[in-house]
Length: 149
Image 1: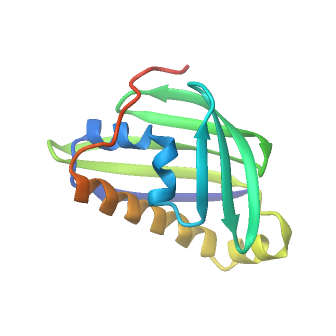
Image 2: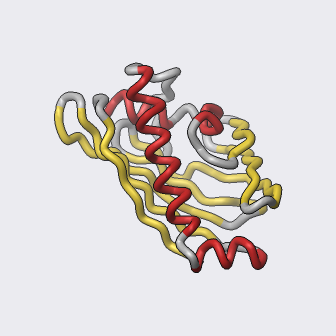
């Protein structure tokens, strides 16, 4: 498994950043290569993405979700990955969004991309695009405030 840690500071309240992150079906708006995320109930997601030119699909389960604090998941089928996104209040209109991701790169292209730091760079780029997305809007596109423990 490969471990990636990245973070970004966004100029919105922690509630706004968290609420937007719970809108999983909006991920293709800022995540490079993600074609679709389909929410299948409160805790199950189906992902379709193109990674290094290879189409990949996987199912994931939200294993923990605490409003304004964290969202954790693990894949249940397909591409192996798990992670957590945490939200840290830095001020009234400033939030640190931190991603910790573990994934199992498959095939030569993904393994090479991992060794060259491309997967880490993609994660960093996704967070920067999230920052641009939420700051340009100023408000979230929706919210799910339920808890999963």
